[in-house]
Length: 334
Image (cartoon, rainbow, N blue to C red):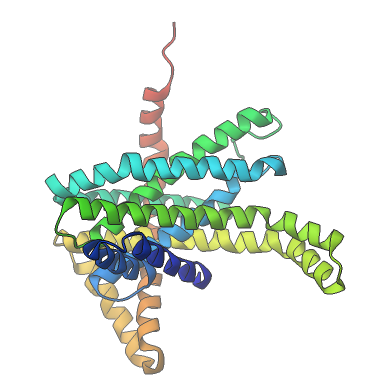
């Protein structure tokens, strides 16, 4: 988590450089960067910490889409997904976000909450699949040739990215305090490009790390280099499991905190006040790490709420939403 948070710092710097000749844009980029990087306690920083969680989840989820495909296709697949993510953010979501913020800003909070519910559902579903593994109905490399499997995986990844990108763009938009629409748009575009490059650059490194390790173990001139390569190959599967676990935890934390904050904005602040009260009491008992404890307890309670909400949504999605969507997606018979 800390590594990705540090990488996010580069996004803020990237945004600042891109707007260097426009004082207002630069100022807004710094503000957005600061809010997206760290988990601070005020409302603006809450939005920033949520964006970090979505980015972690996005980076954690993407490597699964290249699993089972030829190694030579891994980077091209990541690039295809990255292009789709750029399109999602810059061509579809950016103008929609600006229009909503200009003409219907009251819709932003409900839309964020819907996205938060989706993240809670996804995270809870993963947990239930771990606890009660069922038979998978997914199409596997044995039932589909590599070209069609790649096409299917890329399409699925871009759809997933669209939801996460919508969350990132909405959270970033909420953090911008620009006086004109065009400055708002430029800052949002800088953030979108920076975060997308960060996420898929990280994914590219993750999916090729085992190949690099194998090469080092075979051609390394020093015994230490070969040992490092063997270590990378050995530990990479476990590391990917850790990344996946962090991604699931981030989904639940982010989803729960978005819903709690949204309820507070809409005038239903009882849950938010209860969580803050518990976190403040625990933090008060540990004065040497008060700030961290306050954040950690708040995030944990948001995550618990995310699990409960997501678990409640699983039967709704399974028995109501999915069948209804399936009715509309079925091709009409001749």
